[in-house]
Length: 403
Image 1 (cartoon, rainbow, N blue to C red):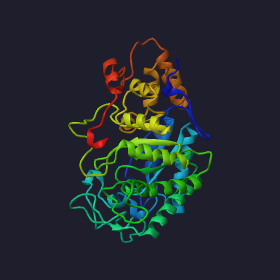
Image 2 (image 1 turned 120 degrees about the vertical axis):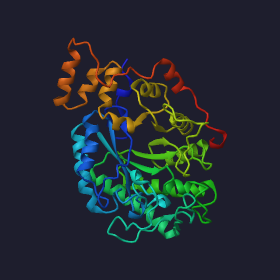
Image 3 (image 1 turned 60 degrees about the horizontal axis):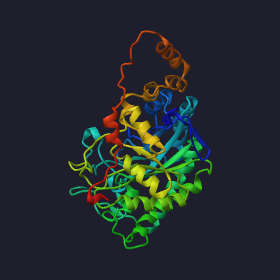
Image 4 (image 1 turned 30 degrees about the vertical axis):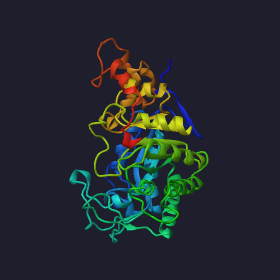
């Protein structure tokens, strides 16, 4: 039986060569919002390594929304050409391409993670050294000691909805096959969704329906700008630390599906400075997969699972159990950009992996695999094992406060 991991998937007019996705991961390598050779190298190796869908990291629709001064941007036309160069390279090596569009809201204007990820009110604006103002749904800081953002006016909310639409149009001009709206991890759309961060008393605050309005209007504007044959993803924090629960995400997914969203990318957390992973809910293999399964079942929408998906048999089990339609890997692909080739061999379809990489690599790897030397690649580990696989697939009930 052919592994589902290597079964093509069609989303609208897009056909993916496999179900393996590079999760959007910030590299903080842009220069005034613009992509460069680092991004070509970084993303290109996943296409060459056989990944089916390669996501460009969170790319900002507004310079005020950059998490750091090194974020990618798509708020103006001059950013299109460098991204188009990357897209062309990825497609030339068989990968479909996607880009995540976001805005950090009150979590913007920080130092780089390896420099402490601290608020930096002294930083000039990313675009042209302008004043860098923090904006958010309400004047509520992310955490004690963090700067207080300015609450967006109604007119500015509408301007940002338009900014997402314009960025989607630029993404289409760059040749991307899919777009994802970043609505997770405590960033601007998630802030609007959250009763903790959103204290507005207009049509964008108060009731759950009002707090969802911004996300839904962004989705409507992006879907209107995005070609009908191209899929639209939405990343959600399925649960967070401040009261957003899986039922809220299912309701949001149903509403987004009605507005043309095709896939829910299911993560968690980010609304508070503390981690959502605690002793009662520790990190483990596939610790967020149950959210993808719950949203898939509850909203009748395709989902992408993410979060410590590391081994081939683990990824295959997730798909075969119907818990998600795609699996996204982040740090594991950083560790091994050729993970799809490795996974194909471990699932017993080694030739499948070799056909999805350039023949200048695949020919030699297949030749070695067909020889009688009797060894294994340096990355070899059969998988997480039957007992661990069963545990990773077991239904996980979040703590009472996160349901």
